[in-house]
Image (cartoon, rainbow, N blue to C red; front, side, top):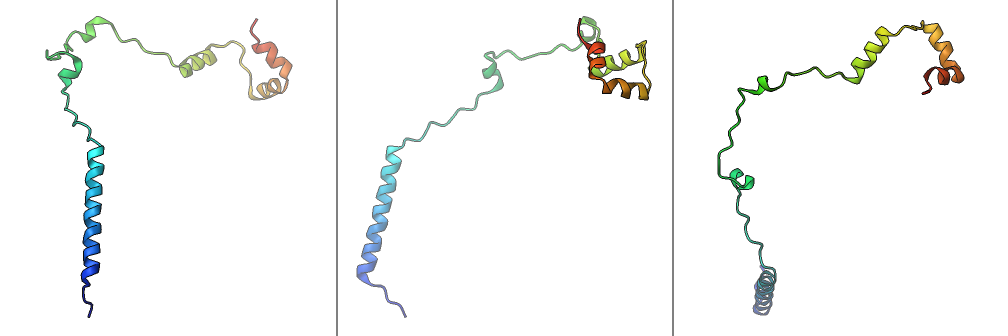
Length: 107
């Protein structure tokens, strides 16, 4: 059976009190930051007027034009080019660096 010692319990209580006092001092030194107020959307926009979007006239403003991607442009160029090479001819031309530079150099 373990008996509590009066001296040990006093020391333990004293150290707990010292810890609590130290924590209170730490809290006093570091002021807590003020709580942030939640800002509503209208306040962030700087206006309390409701935002209204008129979608009815969108189609009348400007017709939607298709966008040509680089892939579309390349495919169109390949379909309309006049000097078409077969697979073997392409391989032969690709082996000659001078021919490639002559073919594709900017003049």
